[in-house]
Length: 130
Figure 1: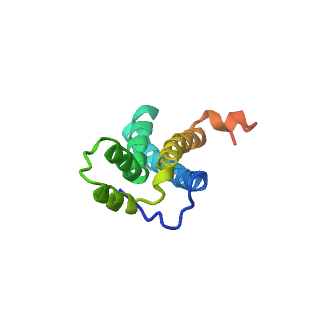
Figure 2 (figure 1 turned 90 degrees about the vertical axis):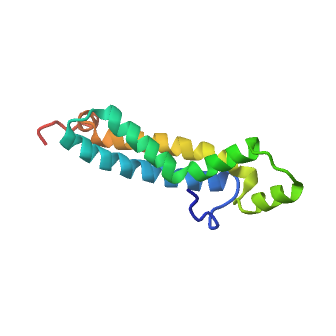
Figure 3 (figure 1 turned 135 degrees about the vertical axis):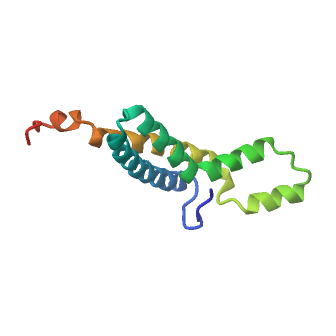
C-alpha cells in the first residue's frame, strides 16, 4: 500500500526516511506478535515471520509493486509510461527506497528480538534477578 511520500526526500535521503519508517513498524509489530506469542506458546520463528511479512506489506509493498510493474508490465505507449511515472514519488530512487525498506524491516526485527530476548539483560551487565 502506498502511504503519502510527498514529504520525503529524494535519493538516499528518501531511502533513509523510508527505512526508518520500516524499522519502527517492524519493531512495533514484533512487540505485538511477541505479546501474542508469549500467551500462545510460540517460539521466535512465528513471531519474526509474521512481523516480517506484515511490516513489508505495510511499508514496502507499494514501492515493490511499482518496481515490478515498471519492469514487467507491457506499457503500450510512451504517454502511459509518463502518466504512471507521474504517480510515483522519486521514480529514480525507487530501488534505493526498496532496499532501505527491506534493510529497515530486518533491523527493526533484530532490535525487537534483542530487547525481548532474555539474554539481552545479561549482555549488558544486569543479572536476571534485577
